Image 1 (cartoon, helix red, strand yellow):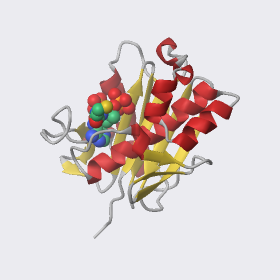
Image 2 (cartoon, rainbow, N blue to C red; image 1 turned 90 degrees about the vertical axis):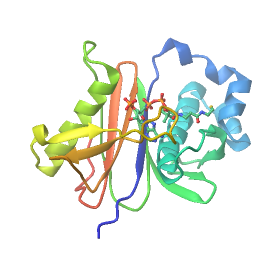
Image 3 (spheres, rainbow, N blue to C red; image 1 turned 30 degrees about the horizontal axis):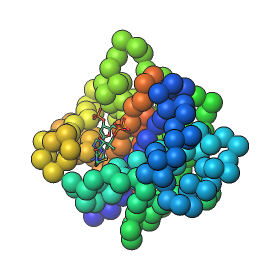
Image 4 (cartoon, rainbow, N blue to C red; image 1 turned 180 degrees about the vertical axis):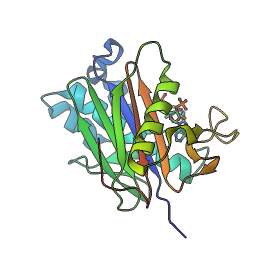
Length: 206
Ligand SMILES: CC(C)(COP(=O)(O)OP(=O)(O)OC[C@H]1O[C@@H](n2cnc3c(N)ncnc32)[C@H](O)[C@@H]1OP(=O)(O)O)[C@@H](O)C(=O)NCCC(=O)NCCS
């Protein structure tokens, strides 16, 4: 049987004025970061970008841990990001981490196993809502890389009272059947993102 490894991703809009000075808010930084991470942010030439990179890494990690332990609360400081931003650890769960920096956004993917994730970040059309645009992106990425008909793919979240919004994590169905790969969605302002991971996943892509 195929082992499906879990994946989580998070995109953050670095141009959002609402987050522009959070690196100067020590209580916020200390709530999100470990003492070692606080020191790294303080010493950084671009403290705001580093703070939100750490946050994205932690949230990507949370999206994996939430699948392993449904109902767990998100305590960012309990997710520890290494100095190279190559892994994120929560208690005894250690996940690999991939971070991509662009001028306007940062994107983090955390996952289990060794497989290379498929992922994408794109600007959504303003007329399309964030959730719908992220689902559309995930369907296109999966269809293009797996050679499947987009019309046969759908993203669903089933009712699950263990999760905060009473919905389980998203999963991808092909002709009504779950695919043997894991899916993560994220959206922030103009940006939508997805990551997919599974044994059938071919080479990494953006
Ligand atoms: C998962 C979570 C962190 C995402 O938050 P966010 O920054 O608002 O949103 P993002 O855009 O990055 O990601 C949202 C997507 O993550 C996915 N998602 C939601 N809950 C998820 C979970 N438990 N595990 C994995 N993925 C999840 C969904 O696909 C969602 O998009 P959708 O609503 O369009 O389907 C948030 O929904 C959550 O559950 N937080 C926990 C709250 C908590 O523990 N609070 C404790 C006190 S601080």
